Length: 169
Image (cartoon, rainbow, N blue to C red; front, side):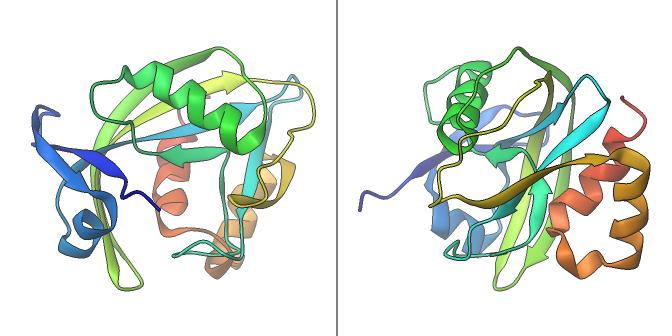
């Protein structure tokens, strides 16, 4: 399996190099990432349950898609590509905001300059089972309550993002 390269950045999202994905997460280096939040016409948010086979945070609920853009590719194109690969659909995406966060996830460190995209989609995803174990539409208020009651069921970054996305929709 080829090693995946991701983009290292500074706190202003300026590229400073390229790193191997797992090593970057082991060493806690700041890198570029994106998170996609999808809503339907009923104002429900699409969640994905990470596959059981994921190397970290398996079987936890999270937003529709998160990933890292490949070097020398456009961020929006990469977000659309990964959404199609993981969830099996395409839709218009608009960058809403970006921010830096750092959180320990098991033995890894997610230290990301994260670009957050919003999109609209009505339908049923076609999952890549290697990436996604399940999915569901959830009303935002009910989701917020469940995250407060059962935080262990959600990825660490999703809990950070949910508070930020709540004011944007």
